[in-house]
Structures are given as C-alpha cells and as structure tokens.
Image (cartoon, rainbow, N blue to C red; front, side):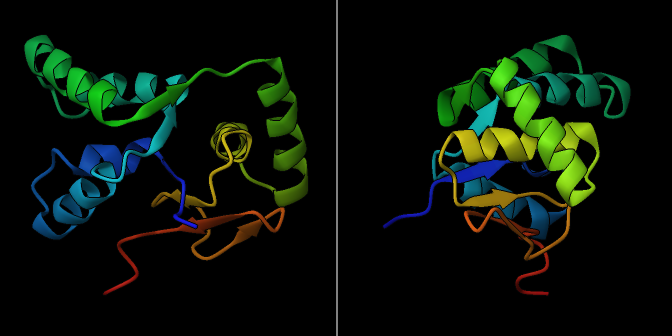
Length: 136
C-alpha cells in the first residue's frame, strides 16, 4: 500500500525557499500528490505576504501551482471537534491538532511537518515525520 501523505504549510513553503536541501525534499513530496486542507492553503499566502514579502502576482502563481499539485479538502465541524480531542490528548496547539485531525480524516498515514514531534504516532494510524531529519 502506498502512503497517503499530508503536508503542513512549512513543507510547501520550503519548495519556494533558498535552502537547496529543504527545497529539493519539499518538491519531491509535492510530486507525490499530497493532501492539504484549506487551512494549509490559507497559511501559505499569509506567510508569503508577511514574512517573504512576495508580490501578489507571485503569490497567485504559487497558489495555482499548489492547487494543481495537491488534493485539497475542507474542514468542517467534525474536524474541529476531532482537533479539540487531539489537542487535549496529545498536547499540541489547536491549529497543529487541526492539521493532525485533517490528516486522519483524509486517511493519511504520514504527516510531513517541521513543527511537531518527529516519529510520533497518532492514534496508531498517522506518523508525524520531519523530512529534513531523515538524512541529516
């Protein structure tokens, strides 16, 4: 069975960054048609505007690319409730828990992120992986 993967916004953002190692790994993950949610899709322009100071034309181009390469799912009240349970049980922030809940709802078995506990298993279904720690 092939992994169904979920990408956090930080992984997608490295695909446009200057760090060659992280950029290369991020692009390889994007090629696997990952799952993301509208939460992730909304975080990306916010970072590109505030921190990266990209033009709106560049942001549109990057978002269009992400939309073409990723499977995008919505978040509903069930996801919100599941995120609250995950936050309480695993002690992640609510927004990180929303990412985890979304990955679980979409039957992903791997969540790639730089911001959570590397190699942690969630509900014996989802493994959190920091892809940048694998070969360093």
